[in-house]
Length: 183
Image (cartoon, rainbow, N blue to C red; front, side, top):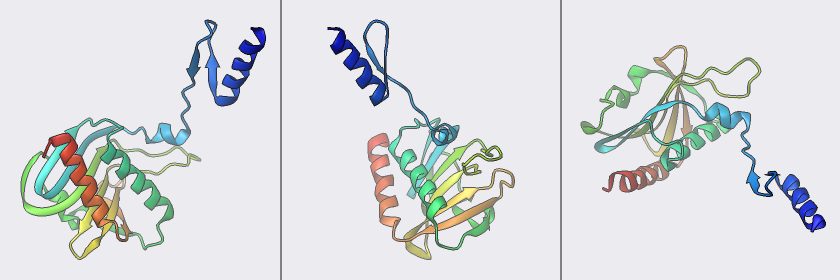
């Protein structure tokens, strides 16, 4: 019996589990620095598809569209081989739209993650940012653009181009609308 218990303890230690005094096995909570840094304070999620605007206040960090948008942001920020363009907020017309749920006179496709500003500590491997947007530009209908708001100069956005992702963005938004709005 002692050998079995010892074996369970060793397996638990090797697998990252902890064994309590009562013999129960509990999974340790492991969080990397990046996971902690990216548990940002998302205040609002705004989605526009066509003329319809949808908004969520304090969305769940596990909401698929939010997770996917942040993942594409990370991938783009790290691996972008396209030229980065810095744009003023006035140049991004869809950001001039109402940020409230309803109907717009303009036809846009975008996701905007509104969050508190994040400026990493010196030596921290994280991205400075405020809001993040994923949008389709009418001049490049096959591509998605990822915009990252400067946390210090709020009217300044770094914009990255992701080729051939517009259908993915449209489908992700359609899935979100279907699941969370029942449309």
